[in-house]
Image (cartoon, rainbow, N blue to C red):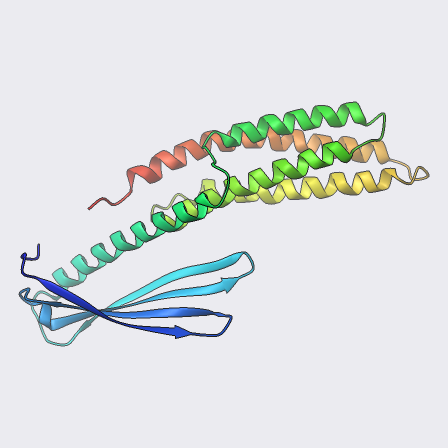
Amino acid sequence: MAPPSAKAFKTQYLHRFGALGLCLESSTIVEDVPMTDCFVVDDRLWICQDHNGCTVRATFQIRFVKTTMFRRIIESATRTEFEKWWTRFGEMMMELQCSDYVSIDDDDFELVAKELEEITQMLECEVQDMVLPDTLKKIRSSSMRLSIVAKRASMRRASKTAPKSGNINMALFASNAYRFAVSLVEKSASALKDESQSGNVLLILAANETLLALAEQMKELSAANKIMVSALESTTCVK
């Protein structure tokens, strides 16, 4: 809506808080546009360290320096533009994050589910021989892939504003539950080293049943994930 002669400039200050994080504080001032001399937009980009990497947050406020009858229009337009910027920023961060990993397709949920089924079949065959190293290695590999898929879903949630977090939370829950299953199998393998302990085979079978249940859950998550991606893409703000 601004004329071609419009100008805008920012004043920025970078605040560092040691190893805890940093904050980029900006003030945007627009010139040569009617009524823009009555307000200034202040925003802050917070980057804080956490146990998984970092958390990025954005806050902003519209500071009116003069009285104007267009206050509501200015507030609405400014919020809309800021939300568009934040959505684009989230998408960029998601692309950068995903580029650091192996290329992941949306069908990877189904692929991981198939891998889990194969692993459970291997467990059934190896219970008699009490040999689990190769199986545990495959379990860890599938767990890493599942973690990457769940992280990608989490990045989508950060870059979108649609209230569709239920399916993503399911993916994160499945990732945590799968790690629990891996832990259960590892404990079972450790127990197998002591032949005097009873119930070792039952522990392996219990782990096997857990993995089978997770395989079925991953199939359901695959369908839910496709629905979620379609819904989120339809809500993307396009300038």
